[in-house]
Image (cartoon, rainbow, N blue to C red):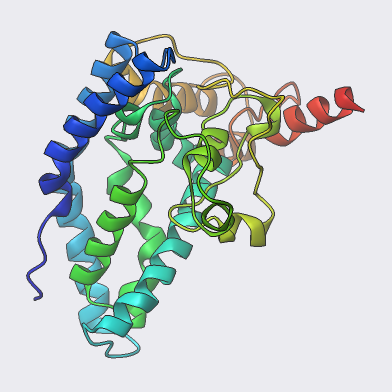
Length: 296
């Protein structure tokens, strides 16, 4: 098995230094981006994710190895060119994982954690799920099946996560136009964290923004539409336990209480956030269309 380091653990000192630098820069520019309780909640969520990650990654590795050892189609070597192919394959997988996490409530229940802050700074990048690691890896199962070694896949997933740290900031306005055209940037990702109707469920990219442009989910940051961070209905808590599990509670409550058909109960798990069986709910597409109609 290739001996790849756990780069996320090695990056923790860099995360701390980068947050301190961002805090200094934003204070100097009179940008109020940090709030103490919110930042500590994000850091607590990040620490919980790292701790639980030891268990979830064991499950992921076991599953990947089971597929790789028994069902792989090709024997892909650990080589420079295979890492290039894996880079695109992993980023493609991330796009669809991320997009479905906004369009299916079962996946949103774990991903909502990352969107629960009403602030946008590098500490927000650390606000990670405690539950998603145990099931969202299904979007990557085709990679060991294709023949990529599980250790390679986990390394590339960590590289993608590391890349996405720096884009959680208001300290950087725009990158050069060529960079904005191809890569995910702070501007693109600010849109993704916006609760404004026009920004909802847009820019799901990991590293490459090209997937959003190809699959119709790209939205540039608008000069006359300041991003409002957080959720359509914010949870208003700094309690890490509530942040981690409150959407699971709401989802199961919607699905398993009250008089509903079996079909409707199931649809509360698979339909987008905001959907209601009685037609009174509004999903992001509805809110976006209302916003666009008002602008006409």
